[in-house]
Length: 294
Ligand SMILES: [Zn+2]
Image (cartoon, rainbow, N blue to C red):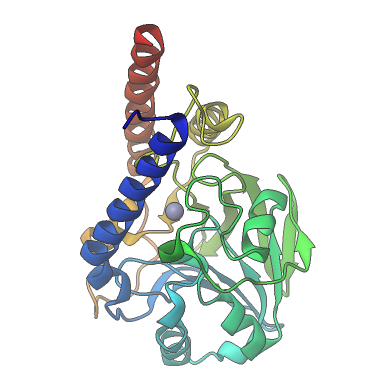
């Protein structure tokens, strides 16, 4: 049988589905393993699982919750929030960093439990509202579909989100998803002010295409611009959507007493961005060679 373009696309889809299922099985333990809430700095707490990071920003007028985990993560997030003396029901604004199921699958449930508003960038809003169907990379894969969640407000680069005394600045860092975003804030403690970045890192999922038959138009350019933008940022403290990305478990062990210095790591942020940019450049070269050979 001659392989047509259609057959090849189908085969690629099956390989991707197989990879996703395998990766899920491997990651599953760390993605779902409970982990106690972590006080990062100021009013910022990590309230997710061992690896899938949800971030709580508290205020007297309600809280902001960034990310969930898989669809069964609500109970763990609730338990962590309550262990800090706060209530899930007081969450007023829900945000995401990237509209991928491992960070969004419990959003619809938490939204209905709390009545919170869902805010997202335009391109991630589309994917949130169709439960991942229009994701140009994972769309159509039942493993990565999630419960759709209605978006109440579109946020953009430079927007400042305010709730009580909490203010967060929105940074659009596309590539990992079309609408990926990071959030910046400052925390003042003990006479010191810390620049904090809740950073969406530009990791390239296996099978993603940058410039040659790109996963979506402008995909490669989005990644390049995100690395450049992040290289120009200088957070004292940074966290990310996966604990492994920012070294949570190297920096912190459960029971460790709180210090605002625990997560200070300006060099680590630049090193992480640099590492991802190197992987990107290798893939750009590989695609160039592939283009020359075809
Ligand atoms: Zn992702």
